[in-house]
Length: 279
Ligand code: SAM
Image (cartoon, rainbow, N blue to C red; front, side, top):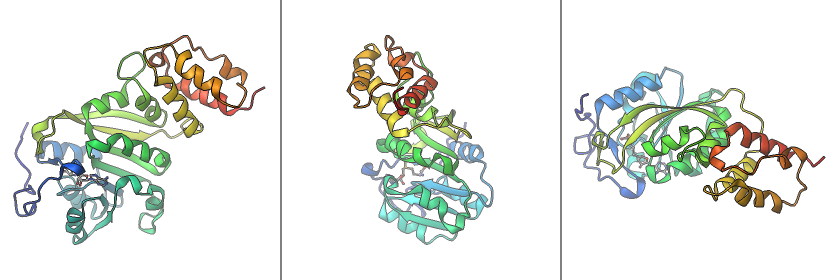
């Protein structure tokens, strides 16, 4: 596979000597084969409501722009945001992505109510908070293609029964179909990160089970708080401490298991049962 650096490199004219900023998790993609693989996986079309999180120097932005004629970028680094402001077809949201209201973004007239297509080589230091921040807007999203630490994607996609299965797996699989589509070595970036990376595709489920997300989040956190012990220690105590009496369906939940043995659907069913008043 070609590891030829892309022409927009840090030291090149477009990079303009930009120093990668560690505090913003800046590792710029330079591997054309990987960039091509991501763009093919996204399959951008004119008219798509594309939003890229962290365009950086434009490794992905540039080819997406060429194929669609326009996109929105969310960038926290003032210098990088400034570069993109001058580009035709690029709408810049200079902000911390964790403060962006993606519902409001989807409502903007330019997008005419089309579902968002989110793309990004995410800053790894805040990748999990970004995934949780986006969760409430899943119904406004067509798909998400993100570069992440490989280990995070393994946890997102894990099924019950192993050490990777946890809060992240349950909270995301409840809402998205998750697929790891491309492995990416450290050498594909400048500067190279210390970890292996991968690209994940996340497609919101068309008809996710109706459940109170906050309640589900709280019970899943309680369940995995003591993952080596039986559920009666963490989840059981959390249920006992709730002020509301336990509905029968929730009381019947088998707590003599470990959290990692419980499929997503059972956690969801428990949250649905807890939302009912006691019978
Ligand atoms: N997309 C570029 C690439 O692939 O070469 C840059 C990827 S770099 C890993 C992460 C990008 O996210 C940088 O441009 C960084 O400035 C930006 N970023 C970091 N933290 C951010 C935040 N909280 N909100 C928005 N953008 C952020």
